[in-house]
Length: 80
Image (cartoon, rainbow, N blue to C red):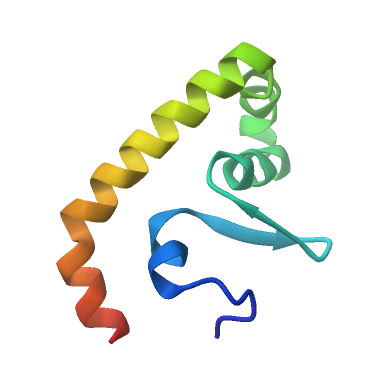
């Protein structure tokens, strides 16, 4: 169920989570998840540092785009 009014394509393109009635996507969603996992809490603090965050954001977007295009046909069949 898409309660976010975001297109299926966009939902498949990036990780999305809702926490405290706020929508997080992409690297921000990963940071929220990592904060909740004890082993990844330190990683979330490191990636949240300003320069590291921007580099991480670029890396995430690049990898997410590659994976999206690689799996686009498979995903389209699933959600049609």
